[in-house]
Image (cartoon, rainbow over all chains, first blue to last red; front, side):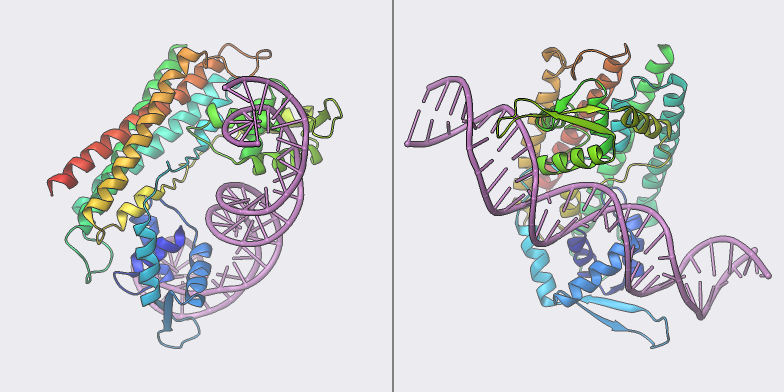
Length: 181
Length: 181
DNA sequence: ACTGCCATGTAACGTGTTACATGATTCC
DNA sequence: GGAATCATGTAACACGTTACATGGCAGT
């Protein structure tokens, strides 16, 4: 999966692993996450498989390695996009697991945990709400873009906002119910 | 993580791997998923670590192996529950990845994919809505339950319903926008 | 006879996480 | 002088997925 995200970003223009790490920490933070260790190793694997190429700028000890997509890389990305997803994305949500098994826990401890989550998700929502006004509606690179790309980027951002709003409302109702018990 | 889900279910009463697989396919389907291969291997690991014990019923070639939680197992579960989660659960959502990079795709193909997802998620929502009337508000086992357990089970189910409603509404709006383009 | 569900497991592979490790440059 | 950010990588381990593999029992 990360493979296609890296190819997806590199289709617009060449980037370093560090740049891709930054893209994942901003543009895709609401639907995919990866650690830098995984990004660097996956980039190397993609290069070995001929889907990417890289060059080192200024051969100083610790220079930048800039990756570019190859024709095979574009083909692999297009082929993946052409196969529609026909199942639901399986979800994994640790807080819900904890809650499901919280029957014996102290009420005050649960409320503390829920309130922490409420604050964290409020922050995430605030971040999303600032994205479009920060020029995020035109993010990765510049050239080789079609007119519809910002449409889809904004659609995923809209998902992120709706998700956070739903989640916060659910937390608020749950906190109120627990307090009333 | 699966470790604690298995311990969580087994705190109520002993079960087989097959039973646990069924629990994961129903009770926790909206927040955690695991394959039977992983369930069986994790159960073995937990037994090796002394958190579970098992007995074989009727020593026929292919009998049932019934797992029970040990005192150490309960302690491990309680300890995990006592450490509150202070970060947001990272999300991974394949359809959003595909959508994010769909700028060059054929509009009709994207619409097909979104409509398939809409139907699948409608089915999932329908399943959730039938749960409480099917006695799911009192699911795993029977004994050793506290009064607040159904409260938390219903809270996670409520999350699942709200999530699906939000997701379907988002899909509907997106489909309408795409059609209008 | 065949289908579907009960019931268990292994093996190989793929993905993801944590920790270790280094060093330059920029801003305060 | 110190902290933050830029920049890259490896190693060990943990977790998750797919495929292979077996066989009983109940219902049609």
